[in-house]
Structures are given as structure tokens and as C-alpha cells.
Image (cartoon, rainbow, N blue to C red; front, side, top):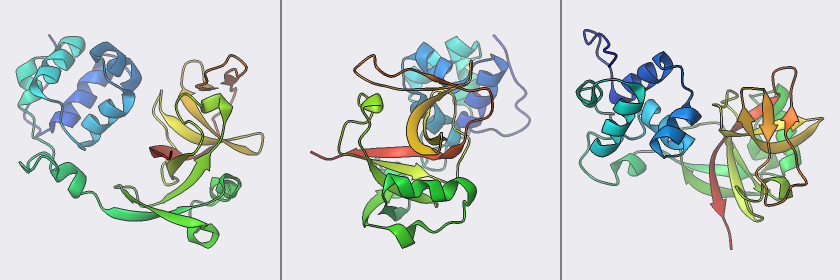
Length: 218
């Protein structure tokens, strides 16, 4: 078991992140080993919510730290409220402008661009991200993750996707949603078919923003 100093206050999320990095794992690898999704790990580490007690024990076993050390960290501010819906209710309500996906290229070189000028409609969402826009996706290469008529919300203030996370990229001048993989650097499709392959990169990707949420319309 690896123990860490406790003289510096740390939240549960901080401790998970610290131990994960010490173990040489990325968020996706930790998620796979404990049986959750990468966004769940990201939410733990960012303090959106804390893992339950049973999951904490599983995380501690994978990261080879004491369950007590993890559990004794400060609970996230959102988890200290006993109301079960507190984490959701405390997130700001925002009206994300819905734009045509082609307009997303504006934000590649100008993160200060205003999406409201291109808004076709608005969708209310709860999010801590301030710079967001949404668009409808129709991409067979991503139909397992985002079926047709899915609205994708992008945080264009965040251009550093975690390994295994979805983001909006510029690929040969075209905005495309893909899953980012670090080793080797590539953009992955997520399709029912075999017609779409990885896009391998020899330079840093052109990231327009990270996908924060998707909304399916029927």
C-alpha cells in the first residue's frame, strides 16, 4: 500500500487524482479497472460528486492505497449537502446556443467568439462550464455514442480532453466529434460499422472544445 502525507488537506477527489497519477494510470485506465466510465472518474476528481463507500474501497485496491486514507479526505462541496439532488441543483442553469456544426470552426482560433450571434435556438442545461454551444450531430462514424438527432453540448473554453474523452476536433478543416486517445495519438470513431478508422496524428490535435453532455431527441 502506498501512503501519502496527510499534513496538506486534500479532498477525496484530489486524493484519487494524486494516487492515480502515482500509479501511472490515466482516467480511462482507472475507469476500466473499477468498472465505470471515464466521465465518472473525471467527476470524482473535479468534485462534482464523490464515489460511494463500496466504490472507494475498489478504487483504493486498484491504486494500492488505504481505503481509510481515501475516505478521510474532505468531501466535495457539492456532496456536503444531504439533499440527494444537491449536486444537480447547484449547477448553474445556462441556455446554450444551438448552432450549425459548421459554425463551430469560428472557435478554433478565437475562443472569445460569441456563439449567440449564430444561434438557431437555445437549449437549457445545467453546467459549470461558461463557454458552451450545442449542435445536432449526424455522423455515422459516431452513431454508437451519438445517434442521429442527438444534441451535443461543447465546452469551447476547454481544449484539453482527457484520454478516452469525446471532443470536437478540426480534421482537415472539418469539425468532427471523435474520442481522443493519447497513446498513440489518434482520434477514434465509435460506429456500428467498420467503414471508419482511427485518425492517427503526428502533431497535437486541433481541439475546438470538449463534449460536456449529449441530449437524445426522439
